[in-house]
Length: 40
Image 1 (cartoon, rainbow, N blue to C red):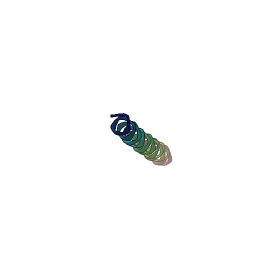
Image 2 (image 1 turned 135 degrees about the vertical axis):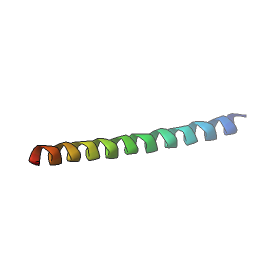
Image 3 (image 1 turned 60 degrees about the vertical axis):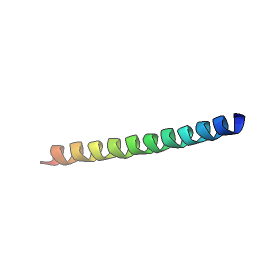
Image 4 (image 1 turned 30 degrees about the horizontal axis):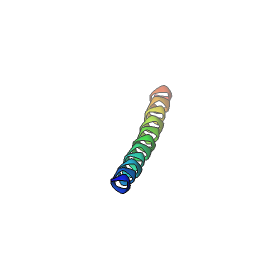
């Protein structure tokens, strides 16, 4: 059981890390779009 639990924790950490990366990319895109709107 501990091994399964450990694998679950690792996989959930990976998912959280991926979501964090996605959020950063989305934030960057939003900032870029704001910059483009300001230029126009």
